[in-house]
Image 1 (cartoon, rainbow, N blue to C red):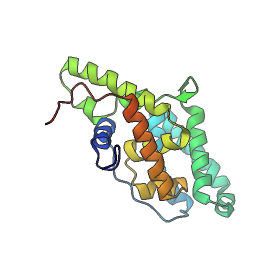
Image 2: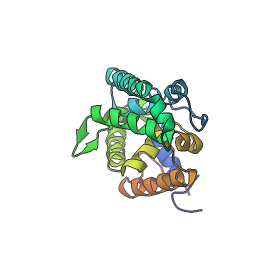
Image 3: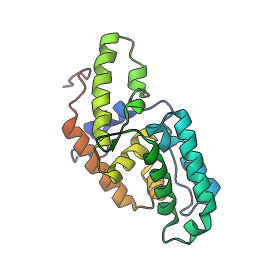
Amino acid sequence: MEPGGPGSPQEQRLDQRLHRPHHRDRHPHQPAPDHGAFRELVEGDYAQVFLDDDQRDDAVDDTFNRLWLSWNEALASHDTRRCAWNVLRATVMARAPHRDGRPELGGAAFDTVILQNLTDPAAYANELTETLELFTAISRLPHRQLDVIVLRRLCGFTHEAASALLGTSLAAIRSDERHATRFLDSVIPPSSTEGTTP
């Protein structure tokens, strides 16, 4: 099995560390969704990773107001999905806090299941440090890889749903995810709470 590939220990570890309580499996919609279907598909999920609740709601509203006013243009564009995604991404990134030119993901780090299930203060402090390091590493990914990891690992989108949303081929989604996973695995050591197995 290829290191970092589907089902590998690295991928399983990444899934465990990034799992969030509202993480759900997203399925693809039609290739060129209408305005309402696009809103239903992305409302809140992507924005929630970068913004607090009020900012998220404002960003999503602004995105879809802009899309509503220009939806016929978006439908006439070369790729409606990519056009709509670019509006959402630009709106979210304009509102997201940044450090050194990279979006901050620290707030989303506190929303992981692994942290919420720890009751021992020492274990929590240790896991929090490692989780914040992981989310900082995610923020350093190239834009496409960042979006794929956020959609796939933090929002629960399937490969097909991420492909449909981004207007990108399945092969590109899988490649971006594979490269991102390798990078994250190279910079984030195994959790100190993980035991060794024979």
